[in-house]
Image (cartoon, rainbow, N blue to C red):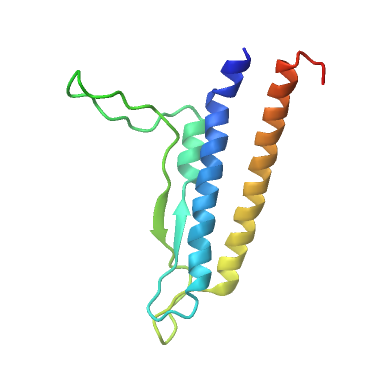
Length: 136
């Protein structure tokens, strides 16, 4: 039972969510760092829609095995998509980074990352409690 709890779909999804939040944070930090770079267009990682579909039971498209010698592909959580963020108009240098907008996305991403780590920590504490058979 404990092993199934450790390796179930929710645990894998939480782990994947943390990975995507980290990657998105890196992209947003790059946007902020390039606030004065001429011609820079900010990018963002979009994965919330795919994550919602995955949590709803839809599996991402899988690869087809064309030979018995191919390794099987594991079905995992969906990957995010990097997209240009055209929130604001470019300035005279062609840079379209809006610092206020980027910082609000950074704050939102940090809150969601912290919330996910809290859920994951509680889940692991529950597993630890089950392994110790309720002895603390």
